[in-house]
Amino acid sequence: MTMCSIKIECVLPENCRCGESPVWEEATNSLLFVDIPSKKVCRWDSLSKQVHRVTVDAPVSSVALRQLGGYVATVGTKFCALDWEDQSAIVLATIDQDKKNNRFNDGKVDPAGRYFAGTMAEETAPGVLERHQGSLYCLFPDHHVEKYFDQVDISNGLDWSLDHKIFYYIDSLSYSVDAFDYDLHTGKISNRRSVYKLEKDEQIPDGMCIDAEGKLWVACYNGGRVIRLDPETGKRLQTVKLPVDKTTSCCFGGKDYSEMYVTCARDGIGPEDLLRQPEAGGIFKITGLGVKGIPPYPFVG
Image (cartoon, rainbow, N blue to C red; front, side, top):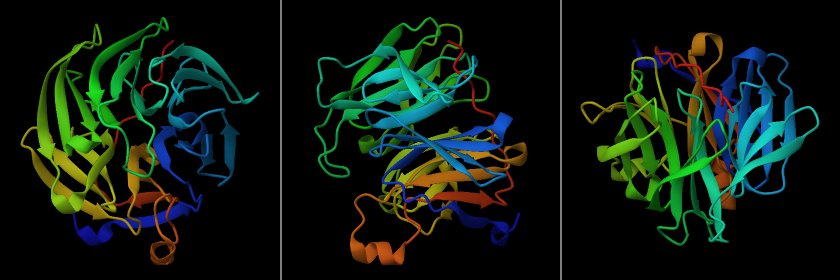
């Protein structure tokens, strides 16, 4: 595979203040994503190029497919069901009620249909926040919630190994991609260890997804890139640089899940820097990576 075959284009100049949580919906040929501080869940139709946006009442940090139809999302400190047609959010569960300054951050559904999502203290400026306030939670199909651990700074990217035996997780300010033993049957996680430590120029690890070869792709906030890692050897295999600095998350989608979609942020970029990266906050599509992703799992509750 030659590197020159990789093509990067901004397919949607959305100007997201903080775009996050890209999820491909095969049924509608669409990309779902959120703009956290704008309190918007967006759905971009890759065929018509139309965008539908639903505004909720608090910062919305992740969105996922739901088996029953519609979507689920993390809104403020609530797990919610989203009815796309009547643009309403129904609360399924509330967490961190003792921590008034907290909000959810990244979330994703596991192979058994449970919704994992973590929290953080609300930032006073991009990257500036009270430390160790967050936790990792899981919303089960019966709508009960379990807390897995606390002392998290910025709960971020997450995914599961192809054999469903390992859970991968990022707490951004640890500058590490971690792995846990994972029990598909119970959802329990244990035996935390680091599988990759970010290098200085890679900056802050943010969102993450796994490809069909079991390798991890991590979006590097302030690093303007996505990196491909081998979690078994701890080696970086590939770096793909984007024309924006604040890359936040990534997912595979499109035909056969052969395209990668990358979200990014505009907040925290000064006027001079915006001239250099006018597409900041847009949605990017990367083709020619030579590797495919796997479909997202739907929440089964």
